[in-house]
Amino acid sequence: MDRKTFIQKTAGAVLITIPAYSLLGCSSSDNGTDNPDPDPDPKGDCLANGTKTAIGTNHGHTLTVSTADINAGVQKVYSIMGSSGHDHVVTLTAANFTALKSNSGISVTSTAGDGHTHTVSVSCA
Image: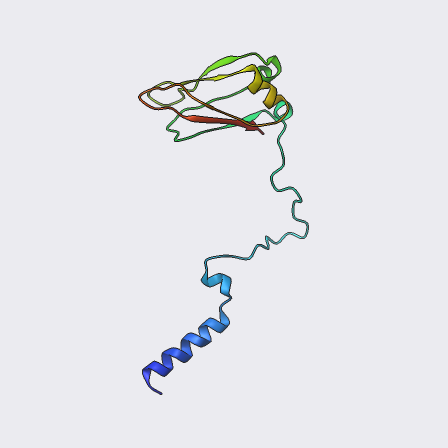
């Protein structure tokens, strides 16, 4: 058997024994559970569980929106300085709090600080 024939037969045998999804970098979607969660992305409850925040292009800023603030439902200005070396503020309006109270997420833009802004998203935990 010459080298070319050997390589072709070896490659063919390997391809037959390896599942196609392994070659593509995919994996099986079976996570080993018999009863997968029917709603893998459940809607949170802001008043019962509080909020979670995400700050785009973040470098140390933080924001905490309390359930008391949601219940009050009046416009509020928050500092998001956190451990960053500069500050930004975000304003949540009464309409933003109404959305959170009904368990809908919101997104606002911070003021410019140090020459840039951040998109700040608040959702229900």
